[in-house]
Image (cartoon, rainbow, N blue to C red; front, side):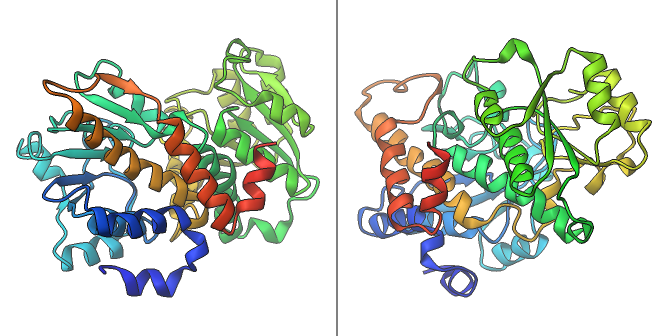
Length: 375
């Protein structure tokens, strides 16, 4: 099967039990037979495992790497892009998008951050991230959102936080030690929570800045943070934010919102020349007052400087759900005599999430970590 050698050399099967299950099933059932499927996830070595599953299922695979609707290209490993092209797998470019040739060209689109929400697929979309939902809220097409359920927490809470510190390690900050250092994280969602907890595990004193108006709405994890002795500061309390940032050794943004930082936060960063500053969101959360040279990786998402931004063992279940929701959408569309089975965004099916979650817990290397996370 395509990519077997690369995947076999890089990973153990227990690092991708959910995608392995789909591959084994789909090579028999062929749910994507004769369908043109666009996948717009970040293009790295670990993404090949998702591609392989879709190809096993009969998909005519196309990979998306274009500016699209969200205004920024998906991060990628150029070597993987070249390898895909050498193997005859089309990679969508900005020129393809600007020509208008891709809008009506696909049966199913597995999107990420709303990059291809301007298209008109015959079946519908599956969106991987919460940041992409804004592009689909009024969509006339059916859109499953993989980020709406519990599975995405494995990637964002466990994997993204680990990736943030792995990038800091690669830049040499681990040589200075993290024990006793002050970490300020902007954002209390899944990503922000994961980064904060990784800091706690490394002996750091952690403060999370969040919007108190969103507490207890289901979109933040302040209760988890407080149970782990993380200080919580209201982003609208300028004095408290300034005080936290002024004494910080590390500041990491993870709100997912462009220009999220207040003037007080920005001023405190600029007045603290020793603080290490990083972004873990898809947008520039600092704004124009903070130059790109002041932020690690020039304001780009820090872990995307790594060869593998999020380890496959943490992203396997998310990528499997992303693909499996495509199959579910096909099944629902087949039952619909006229039009689409639904329109706009919809949470992932609970039974599908539970199947993939239990597969990962029972057969994956991170089973104990997931059980701890769910407590």
